[in-house]
Length: 200
Image (cartoon, rainbow, N blue to C red; front, side):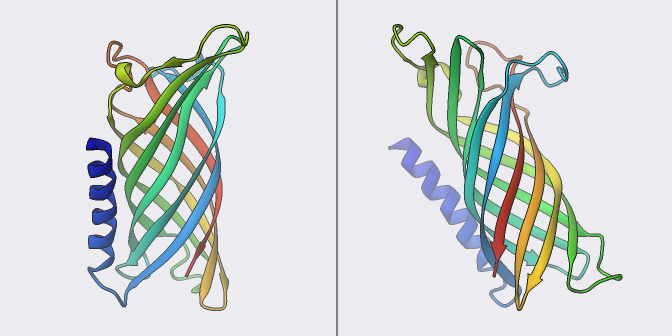
């Protein structure tokens, strides 16, 4: 019940944002392939084995002018880690709020290359550990996982115009700033995603 309330709140945030200016806002949907890992923030090379996953969601974008914009998203996100023995899967509803800057506002009014950065809040849907030996029972990790997570997203996107709409290609990085594990505050969720979307 609490999770339903949190998801409803996230949807309400997206709706409220979209009502700020109905004429200046665009909408779209997106999906991406993600590579996720769980390790301390400063741990760059000594990471756990990567886990493949995906992200799918919707977004609303408001352009203040040709240079700056604000984008809010509602995404289903797969995070976790994987070794030869176990696969840890953590699935979230994630709500980023991103400030974007268009590098081509003077050179080209059609194509757009945007840099973006902003915070996100994620709400845990489920968490599970699976063993590769097919003999050990799977383990539910929800009780050992923090329900909410705060982090930051940054990256860039390329928008190609199709009539009055855009095809969007993006590369982004996500870094959890709060621990996902209740008992261990060191490891954080991290991911890199390559995606495609459509803005209309």
